[in-house]
Amino acid sequence: MNYRLLFIAIMATTPYTHPIQRQTFCFGSTAMGLCSVAASYYTWITAEKRINPVFLAVISGIVTATVSYELYCMTPGKRIDIAYNRINELTHNNLIKNSFSSDDQFFDALQDIYLSDDLPLISAYNHLISALPTIHEALSLINKASTEKNKTIALDKRCQVAQVYAQNILKNISYAIKNIREHKDYLRQLQIYKEFLTSEKQALAQTQMAAAHMQIAQAQSSSTLLKWLKAIFWGI
Image (cartoon, rainbow, N blue to C red; front, side):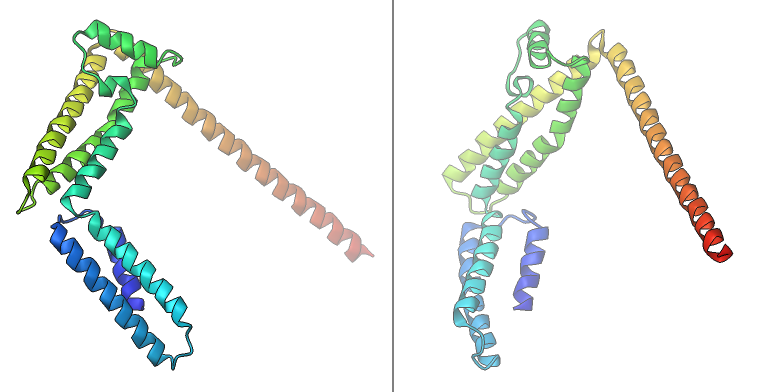
């Protein structure tokens, strides 16, 4: 049982590392199921049948299902699905979803999205920068899916479509970042943002310092009270 739990831990901490074929997934899942049944039976016999077999069956089923899911996540088809999910998480923002024919259209869309922000350019820029790791992860998943040696025509087509989709989204993000950095108000808003961060850090430091002084004062007050109590009792 311990070996199976260790195997799950290893699988869980290294997801999507190496692409596998669907046949490998089926074989691995079947093998894991048989091993789980054998291990459960061995545990039941070793424990002199004192363990409830239903409990062992449940544990065996959970282990098999978990490993099967991890293996399934390594198949090319599932990698494509995960890549689409990652990209779709980003496309709620129109600056990422859409390609703009002019800079005016782009900045009109930016103003609509970040209308309530005091520094719309900086808010948009930070959002776009934070989206880069996600789109790169999606591209990595698609590339790994495309390394399937015996790709079917359908899978090859899915890889090509997903690749184009992800690359277009990356182009949209790159275009948006470049446009924002070249805007005439970008440096002014960036300076205000940096000053805000500096003042926020200073305010946090002052708050922490005030809390520390309060703790010292409380400790000194407790020490003074303790001295008075000692003087009273020892005097008596």
